[in-house]
Length: 162
Image 1 (cartoon, helix red, strand yellow):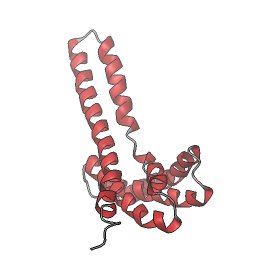
Image 2 (cartoon, rainbow, N blue to C red; image 1 turned 180 degrees about the vertical axis):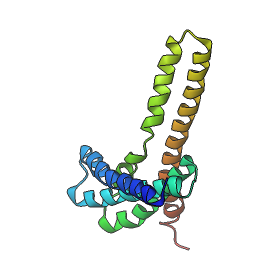
Image 3 (cartoon, helix red, strand yellow; image 1 turned 30 degrees about the vertical axis):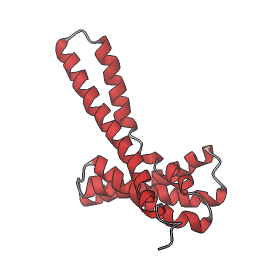
């Protein structure tokens, strides 16, 4: 890919995530004053992951964890200032990172594997199922850990006085 094509792709993914995140947040009755923050959070999360994967060549699972941890850290700071809990922002902001393509491939491979009559095709479907399923699970784990781990460091000692 050329440099301009990379930035165009990252820009389009960022813009799409900026629309997806508040749309998802509206399903859960997030207050209207929070939707711009959710849009920015979704755009930042997707932009960071895309830049790390496409631009820097980092593995998608690690890039997903870094992007989720970054947005979690941002909303650890922003949430209390707006007097809104952090999960209101973070859950909707990561929706554009859900590995739908890998989950779809795993499901289609599983269905094709069950209906397969040829040994070579069966082994191909098993490989695709394991590859896509493992990758999907790893990305979901990276999302969960990326959102959950940063607050452990910042909220652990907030009520203790040294």
